[in-house]
Length: 219
Image 1 (tube, rainbow, N blue to C red):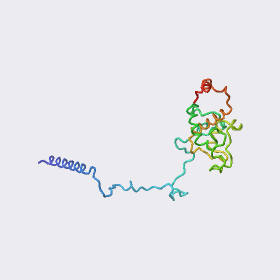
Image 2: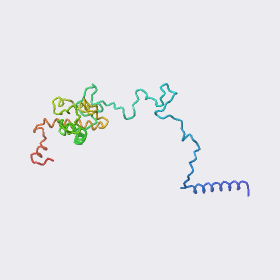
Image 3: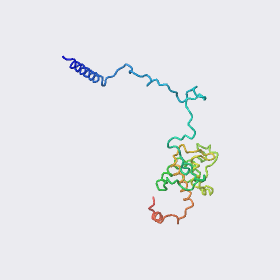
Image 4: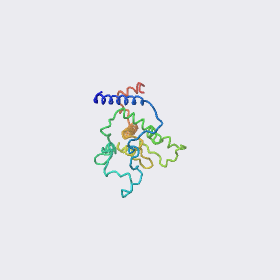
């Protein structure tokens, strides 16, 4: 046998042995710990967020954010949408351009209002919610919720209600953490619906809807 043929045979046998070993290991389990060719993958040198790091003058491993840093998606540069204020800093009396006033928005506002606002402000907005009732389990309310029908609140711009929902006022706590920004606008719009319904006249009802009321067909 020539040297070339001998080398070829050795390579072929080696390949067959490798394939056989690979096939034999497939699906097998071992109680032995895994082999780690590089321990740095398991034992990395790094600091936890609250650890000390004497390399820095303040000895904090977790470094403060660079001044002016804003996380992606959290810039919130639209003052109208996120703060209810216009370019002049005054409270606005319109919905943000990105929010459409339609039946879906008002339906959403009514449902969110029933969850977060009605317990204190009542379903009709008069401030006599179940929590504000004498003998309620939450009689700790020091200040009775105001009625949205108060002339002072009737005159307030839409952005006022958004601002109060977001930041709270007097004894009312802020709800920005519980209610998304779009839902806060929906609730503000529904508050305006309650106010308008209080002072609406029969002449304000569209003819089609008035016909339904007269015929008893309104749901």
